[in-house]
Image (cartoon, rainbow, N blue to C red; front, side, top):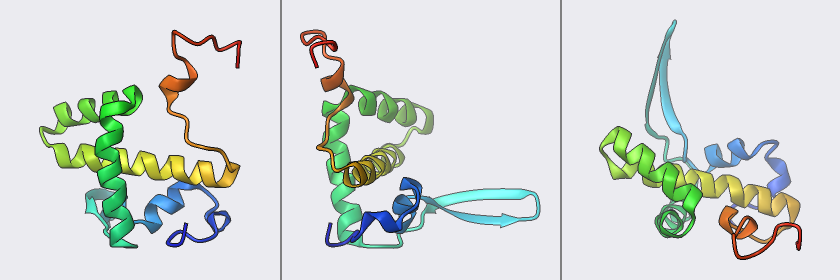
Length: 119
């Protein structure tokens, strides 16, 4: 929260991802659009922590694991998948701060051992 500050200054969660440097850089000219590596703007420590947390989240959260594995198969490269999961975590972080809600993984909401109607 010290790095991000007041989260309400970001109108959309994508703006937070941009602020943290987790979006691709762009080199466009005319009708040609080329997306490159991440922009690496923003706080390096927070971006590094999100990538590290993303690696753990990809092991524990089934939704993030599927997205990570799908991208790794497509790109034949794990780095892109790690950054994608970190970006998804940043979007979730923004939502949590705006809604003042704790983090609840998707599988916790629809666990077969717990009825959704009981919640």
